[in-house]
Length: 185
Image (cartoon, rainbow, N blue to C red; front, side):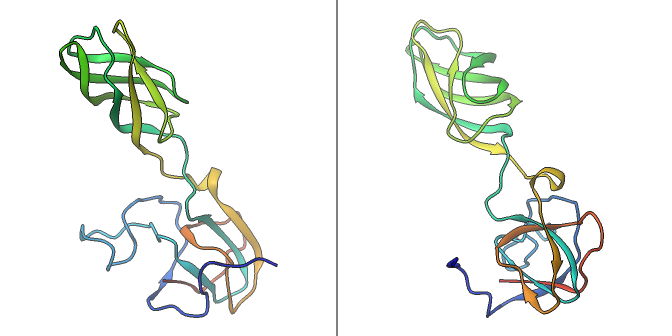
């Protein structure tokens, strides 16, 4: 028997919800969102089904390999000069280039020039051009899930039930959508 780490019997905050394929990282909850523009990110909410049908959700924690936003220097290497658009190798993706800051022939900081694709947080990347490799670590990526690839669909979700998982997004199911959805935290 499964043991859930969240309580579906109590919702301190709730709102009606309509499925959307607009994957937006801004929180959908006013108390979490400081931008003034609500997004579609439900941040581990639970879903109450008001009318029987299909419910398609993206569970909490689903991410995809993506484009590098930031990286940090792990080892500075040797034999480098400061530069822009420096090619890299390694990691799970390709196409990342960086701008480098150098002190005493070692890289001390990098900023992303071209984000590349297919990278994961924690990937170790080598910056080309030195006599001893500089290693950088991917610190953050643009890795939003996509509705088509990352959703799971509950077929025949019954009216009056709460889905047994926490979700970040509720997306449009293939057919026969459940009605009267309420998301809660």
